[in-house]
Image 1 (tube, rainbow, N blue to C red):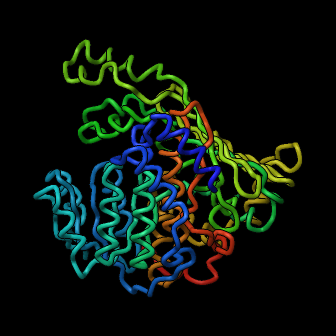
Image 2 (cartoon, rainbow, N blue to C red):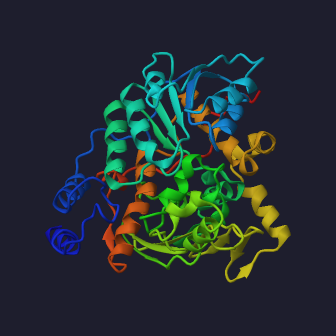
Length: 469
């Protein structure tokens, strides 16, 4: 540990390269950042939230914060789940509030509306008649809102990434452990049909020992980043300025981390990360600014590189490769590659494929494997998930499963350690990119409990009682 600490100091504070400047711990000097990183890295666990089952909630009373891109659909999905009561809606834009509230007309849901001030969301979190706060706001608000909600006795579901700095990751862990309130990151890709199938197969030993996994978020969002309508106040474009790394790692990472039992039998040891230059964002800013003065402030900024590739090694000697590219003209892909000692699977780009040995299974063989290994969750609500939707059904799977676990007093599929770890890849990758792809240790947010934590149970041996209405 002392050797690692000296190397870390040499690469950060003593070399004059502030961790805060690299986005690792915003608001800290180099010395403070280094001290905080190592102090928290070895912090004692207050309470183990992995596998924790909170008291049953017959009715889950929800308050929603953020009604822009993701929030409205989440509100609608929840109206189809038994035992849910929508108690509050919050957004700074009155038109968004009214639009979503209008959709609830004629239902049993009569939420109070919040958004008169920037801090109005706090009033909703302070209510005694709300059990769960569902956060779908810009990234920089995720941790402050989640921590505040947990400290006021609420479970939290928060959009991805849950945090943007290592300090924020630790804030989430502290709050969840101290309050014994769930903090689940809304990583919907964990609930894709292929992802749940392969998780079930991994649990039953189909792949043998997992050796290597790959995931990605490759999605051409270039036009959307510069759109005046898509992201309020261009917040997502601004996240891509001055930050160079894998800013959105969780869609590719979440499912493969579950397959590899990360935080539950294995842990990430260290990572390295490399980014290309930006070949597109500044060019588009210049093109738009030539005809619209609105875009002039966005010319010649330090945009994130087009492609980032981050590689991770685990304690068991396994490897993960995660990529991020939201600007290149490429088909959307999360890759979802699982490579084991007995078999391999690749989910994206479509079609989904499975290989036993070095040959891809035929369509008939793949269908037979689906019938054999599809988890009970898919068999139970798969068709209705597709009907009520969101990304082919995965969003509904995620919401239904979360509510069902809360109503039955079951552990959630994702806990605060997953939220912190998967989000931490962003700032850690920024540090590595800024330091010529040097490796950096990954904090153990479980404080060693990964050695005894149990894998996620997706068998539905208990639970599964919540009706879809």
